[in-house]
Length: 315
Image (cartoon, rainbow, N blue to C red; front, side):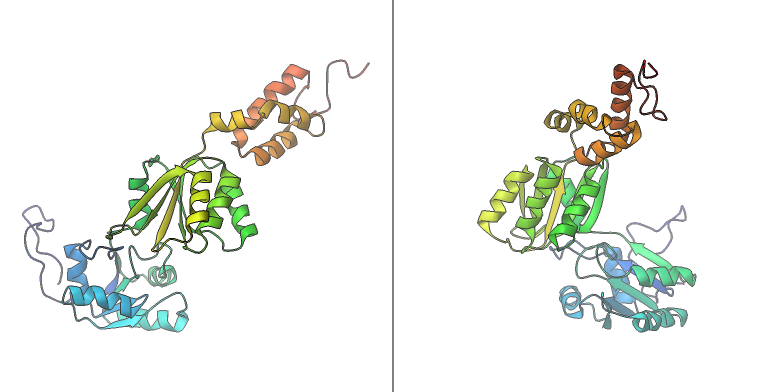
């Protein structure tokens, strides 16, 4: 059988060279550099050399990496526009005992890259799937942003159309996590403007050309970043935007929660009033409801189930 030689404890010996035998049949998800060609693991190079075929998002891009490391494995295209026939062909090769490596143009396969359906179908057929972890632009940008990293949400690319993009940002406004997005250079300024409008002046970072010679991190509040890129024009390179989680205290100061709730409580039930104010403010629903309940008690409303009830209403 192929694989690394085992050490005394039964694990792979860390210092020994990998074997030259054929790889066991299966689908191998191989992370590749996001810029610097040196950012590839020894295990990834071994699998790329020993695989029977490498399925690539773009064979020309992958060939540059393979040439840099003297790898001559055959390649074929597998990308967003590949249909069921392409997936069936790859799965048939795996069923026939072949080892197929899947790579994207850069970074980790399936992270805003093709491959999900191929993995889904392989899992459904109980075919072996192996992940070879490595570079990922969202995590690299999060590390460098200086923003909270204990909880984060990766949203891939935001919608291209402004209205859809704004709705998506509205939906994420109350999420208690750092937000990470990919963005294209032509849309960056408009997206940052929408982020500033929907999320407020949160701290943020725009990362581009990560691990490359001209790597750049620009850190500033969202409105400042929007202004900068509106004036500077579209930057070059791959872009990741990282946005800080909501600062509830700051947002509460900017939004008069009590005034909004008192007005809403005059027109709707406690539950509906809290829901409408939470949607308008972007504050957590649970917090808004708790404050609405306090205000309702102060004003004499009896309960959420009896929103019209007030002391002395039977008079």
